[in-house]
Each structure stands twice: as structure tokens, then as C-alpha cells.
Length: 121
Image 1 (tube, one colour):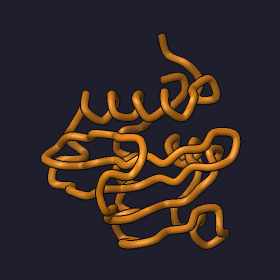
Image 2 (cartoon, rainbow, N blue to C red):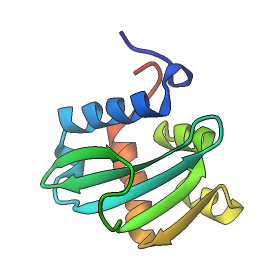
Image 3 (cartoon, one colour):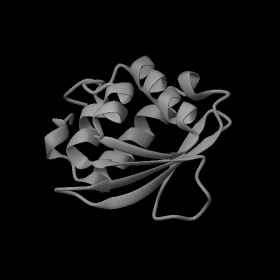
């Protein structure tokens, strides 16, 4: 049953994102990168998103050198997933800090828009 994003733990949200992306791999075909999220706030954790050959695999912790690392609060992460926060504005206002290839980080935003993730999901 679909839930509102506020009902997900960070770990559950990562599982759901992986399910959504892999159910429709079109938007991630041809995108190969390791995107790391360092999330803090009401939920904390580090997750790496492995995009390869039209598939997304999400792992907790650090097991490879990321293409880009994004540090942000759990609230900002949720808003980013739902398309309620612009990646560019988040960078400019300090809501997200990026290390590594910024263009890869911005590409994630365009990929998310193609999934049209809305609540409940």
C-alpha cells in the first residue's frame, strides 16, 4: 500500500526508490555513476546509489569511490526526491553540499523529474 513520504524511514525510502527506478529503467539507461548521499537530521545514514546498465542498486555505507557525494538533511532529501526542491537552488542556498562531479549531481535531478514521483508512493 502506498504511503506518504513522511511515513518512510530513510532505509525504507531507499528501498522504495530502488523499486521505482528498476520498475521503469528507461530514464536511467546510459547513466553510469555512483552517487553517494550523506543524510543527516531526523534520520542519518550514508547510501550509495550504483547506476549501471539501466539498473539501480542502493547500498548502505561506503563500498566504492563515488562519482559525486551529496550531503543534505533528511528533510531536504525527501523534498528533492519529490521534485519540491531544485538542486541548483539547494546548492546556492547551502541546503546541499556537493563533492565530486557536480554535473552528475544535477543529472540526478533531471532523472527524478522523469519518474514523476508523487505522494503517496
